[in-house]
Image (tube, rainbow, N blue to C red; front, side):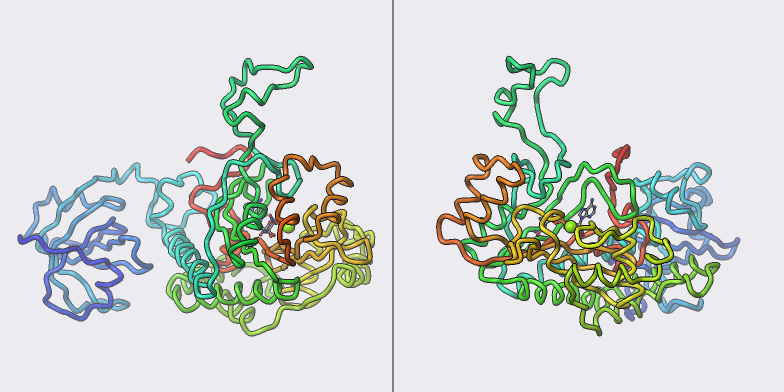
Amino acid sequence: MSKIKKTKIADLLKSEEFGKEVLVQGWVRTKRGNKQVVFITMNDGSGMNNIQIVADPAMFSEELLKSVTTGSSLSVYGTIAQSQGSGQTVEVMATEIIVHGLADADKYPLQPKKHSLEFLREIAHLRFRTNTFGAIARIRHNMIFAVHSFFNSKGFYNIHTPIITASDCEGAGEMFRVSTLNPKNPPLNEDGSVDWKQDFFARETSLTVSGQLEGELAAMAMSEIYTFGPTFRAENSNTTRHLAEFWMIEPEMAFYELEDNMNLAEEFLKYLIKYALDHCADDLRFLSDRLIEEERNKPQSERSMELIEKLKFVLDNDFARITYTEAVDILMKSKPQKEGKFQYQVKGFGTDLQSEHERYLVEKHFKKPVILTDYPKEIKSFYMKQNDDGLTVRAMDILFPGIGEIIGGSQREENLEKLETRMDELGMEKESLWWYLDTRRFGTVPHAGFGLGFERLMLFVTGMGNIRDVIPFPRTPKTAEF
Ligand code: 4AD
Ligand code: MG
């Protein structure tokens, strides 16, 4: 057989070059047949749909056909034919089959049946081979691509900010330490504390919780930049929306005020959703059907909106924009508050809103995404621009149905004196952030930015219910095996 180039299954399924010789490579999903004919379905990850291989048992050894089982890997040479079966138009009539890797049929963990998402998390090395994770992996790729495409088209520069850092941007103290000291016997100061000066970086360092502070430095010269990197938070929250390692997109723009920031964030989210609708139709359709199936037994009132309909709904509607204070008013007057149905009662101005409150605003009150602005300064980070009322800061959180907070951002305090006063109030060490404060000393400008949690976006776009299922290798408390 002459060497021919392999064709991806997604391309093959669109081909109408009947009679053409092709090479298909991938993994077996199913095999069935009889003495006259054998049907093998294969997938190579290029798309949702499988190719059907038709093999004449007379042309192959019994041993070879026996070794073709679910999960085994094949190269198949053959010719493109018009399919006789329903549901597909193209199949391949095999002329040569090479089995690369056997998959013991009795031991292969993925059987051609429905597995629970929890079970699939335990076999992360194989879950890429399921329809669900194949779809999610392809959508993830498309969303990554769309992020870069959006900012590139607007003249933003992508900046790599460090992963190892000495500063806690969000000030929440939820950092993973990075150290090469011997944990059993670290060098100590006279007072018994660890002497970090003897550590690798001669200071205490951690994995970053955000690339924002470094991003601000870049924006103070490049005007409009964005970072897209992994971020790490050692918060011990075992929820369906938190990861210890997640990816964040953080644009930072010089000469932007809060309103500009909100406009950009809304345009960005809509661009990403539209990109998914335009480029991931097969995968979204599959995930939509999956969701309908999953919610079949729920009462009508508890079912979520159909996935594609929901994505279009967000595209077609302006996000509601209200202040934190207005939101608290709405919540105080709400039915669940009055009936004591919230797990955490809203106690007026100063309450840190919980996801149940965010979801009430989005899903019950406004019935569309909401941008909340001007939060109390006490519950937000040190860098946010202070309002004249002395109580609130120019923060903005974007809340999405089914998710809660998807974006957090703000206008930044560009005034050195005000920023330093706030840092003093919070007991922060200003000396170690001298490089950040220098941006306010030399050519400071109004500026703003935000952070989009990439996996929260993926939750929304895929309609999945657990953040562990939209990232290939989730890192959560007590899990880092794969
Ligand atoms: O609201 P956060 O903490 O904001 C920042 O880190 C700012 N420095 C961003 C900026 O202004 N440049 O986080 C931003 C977003 C959240 O809205 C959420 O979508 C996501 O990051 N996020 C998480 N996603 C998954 N797991 C976690 N533990 C997350 N924590 C935050
Ligand atoms: Mg936040």
